[in-house]
Amino acid sequence: MLTAGRNADLLIEQALRFVPSCVVISDESRVHEVRDALSRLPVTVLAGNGALSEVVCLDNVDLVLTAMVGFSGLLPTWLRSAAGKTLPWPIRRPWWWPVR
Image (tube, rainbow, N blue to C red):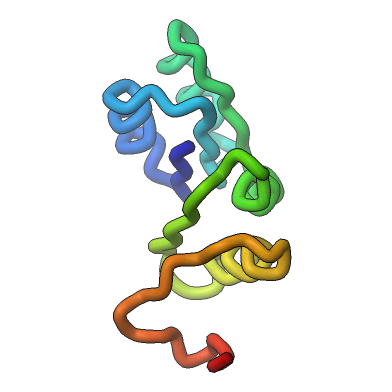
């Protein structure tokens, strides 16, 4: 699975190279561009922040690595953790993340 915020071009490039089962583009205005580019591949294309939050909690997702700036990465990361799923720890813990 691959996800992107607004960078549909990079998402398409990586999807063509790695052929994931699913891609998510948070910017819903670019979903048609992504769907058209990947139409020949067996790739499910989803759009919106809601889709991003849903896919991080799927049972078949082994690892979620978020590299998003600011608040955009907080909800999917928190939902993954709240679902009891494993998260890799960054070298520096974000200031808002509780110490357990």
